[in-house]
Image 1 (cartoon, rainbow, N blue to C red):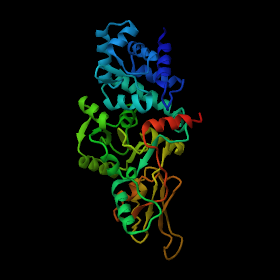
Image 2 (spheres, rainbow, N blue to C red):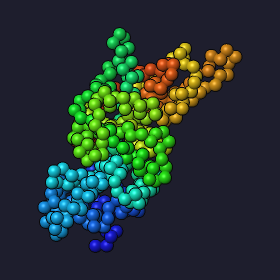
Image 3 (tube, helix red, strand yellow):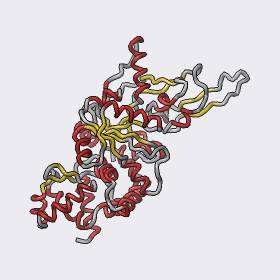
Image 4 (cartoon, rainbow, N blue to C red):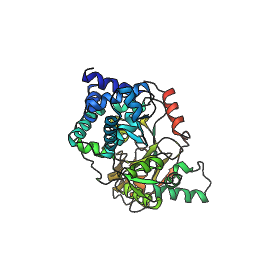
Length: 374
């Protein structure tokens, strides 16, 4: 089998049963060649015969390679984030969510391989691959509004008759508190951007989060830093101060990972901003509302907004009554970063929609596949 055929076969195997497909494109072949050696890719093609996790013994039987050698190669791949190891079993991941996040979060491979894969991914991104994120009518990701502004909204709602009730999956702390273990990990998107020669413009700190079994896995592997819920909320607030957006899988159940995203590196947010690919995410159910009596026009909200959804309307009138900050609701994703960073507390969040995500991940993936349009 020639080398190119191995990577093309691996691409098809990784696409089986996953929502976000890898296209037949030269950048995909280059990316897979960057991540996997020919020997690794060849061994991984045994997963064509079973989409389930495989033991080293079963891989040896299917490949004809000794179990000792299989174990050595697959343990090394697991250490570098190319596969997931669970006990004596190994899992071949889809590309997104999966291989991309784990590989660049682990950040343990040869730097030349990481750089090659990152540059190929950047080419793939600008080839139009982000529109795979919106291939179905049900978005895979959703925005969770900023912590303290949402809390203020709830406090106001206690004393006022409101049209929309704030629900647990919309409240960051309540959403996270359903999990029993948390770990902060390096951001895969920022690592990949750095290797591609375009480091993040907003932060170089680690703000991405795993929970539950995935948190335990990254802690065991020495990749993640365990934190309590209170410590995690402080991480989330610091992320908001850096202008990052809380995003997670578009479900009510607590996801095993929660991202704090910037518009320059995050695959989802970057595609929304640069390609107007708004169907790739579900906006939060909130919009920011500005009290013009409190607003000092300091323009902090303009500076911090990840979507460039605000601008200063300079006055025309003699009395300056039309001097105010404008919100472009068509561009706003309801992240609340403006509200959490307003020094005069002039911005609050108002719930204006009742978009309800499905309960769990399996239901979401099925819904995405059923409603897929390309």
